[in-house]
Length: 361
Image 1 (cartoon, rainbow, N blue to C red):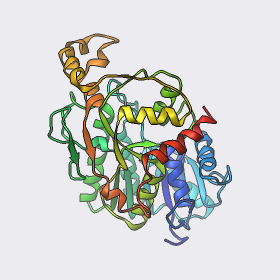
Image 2 (image 1 turned 45 degrees about the horizontal axis):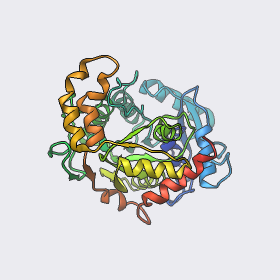
Image 3 (image 1 turned 120 degrees about the horizontal axis):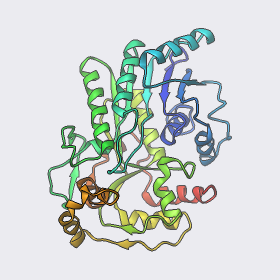
């Protein structure tokens, strides 16, 4: 790509987006993008995450925010038409080419199975960004999805390994969280755009382990362990991945216009193993009460009627049982193919992130 092309990156002030921006600027493994990079932001967004990311990567604290290629614009991503007008006005005023590609990393993050959806849904955001891509006649659109869109056929508590083709957008609302439903609808919208000739890439990360401010939503698990507000653990499993690996995968797929989907999962670990590793890495001693799926999964099922009660009901929903006791594994080979040196192992990721977070929590 040469300097006559430019791109729009959404979510750059968030955890993943900040690492993607660093990757585009050549602070990772991929070759540096040479053209202008437009980064959308909300008016109230700060640059704290970008500064922390720069510090974590060992570069100047202002390297991402003051880089001459980077242009931050206040954009309302829930309005694709207005965003196009703002971009066009800015490009005209600064004699810059409008974005020819879009990498959409912005998302409303809400992984609690009991919580309601965000005020502006992820489906709405994706549809508006696809509209923006159409208005700009963008040559390529990269979407950050999630392993939450994937589903298998084995009963809860039984192990199975999911491949990229295990995309289940039509699962019942009674069995998945509002977040997962939003991610399914979002990815469906991108596939529909692809069927209308939009060039796309799709990345499905697992649980992203990274760094950021203590109160930031992506650091919720770190924060709860640090503050001793996570007393329980289970032998349920989830797929995890280093934020730097997700950024490398996303940028390579965007550069080379690889459709995917690529599943970005370095390893599948039990919650017990993950929580113990994170506590040690952040320098705290924690004792978690272990609730194994035998007998606790059946106990929770027998108490399912409590889901209708206020306050306590959220702990007895089908979604909560799935979150706590899923034994699903994810095949991350399609993501590994995009990495120059393969995935970082879980221990090195947890230790690097935890060691950094000790100094800012």
